[in-house]
Length: 133
Length: 133
Image (cartoon, rainbow over all chains, first blue to last red; front, side):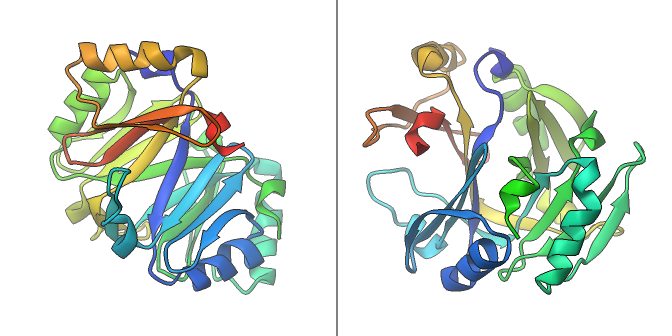
């Protein structure tokens, strides 16, 4: 089969975090994600314009009944797309929220992307789609 | 800040797998992903219409120099979007590739989604976006 004939994107991406209160403060209060569902100590679902960021307590999602269990431990990495013309502005907004930028990279295309961490230590990035052209 | 003012989607989602040859056979040869980069034992980058699926050997990505390290262990979960009208067709295609469907769920919206696993045991799903409306 050819997945492009059926699907355009990954619509649900999961991160695993035990402190969902801290995740909620960070993703909802600081980054301004739209809260879709929050079940304390269990899950935090966040809606983007196109797709969902699902944050699970791995101790709960590992032992899920009904749906297939899933979980992970570690420092996961995800990247959000950003228009090149909004790149400097989003960097500024993060600084205003006291979020530290841990690395900035200049890619072979000439585009830049930058990295920061969530409270669990997951590695987040804002990246222009053009990096992958 | 309000992330929707800057970003529309998660553009890079990462899975961690040690057997990248098996991952390549599964994602490229069976699911038909477009291969972007493959570095044996290190990384496998796959391109979708909108966004990237990045598969890393965690032993390598954990000790990366230059870029921030990241890694995870476990059974991660991701979901690909699917048009409702192509739902049965994609199920058929997976069966033709001898991929077992491990679960099918009917959601409160009435939409259905189904689950299957990659060679590493990561839990994949095809889900209509309408599930999240």
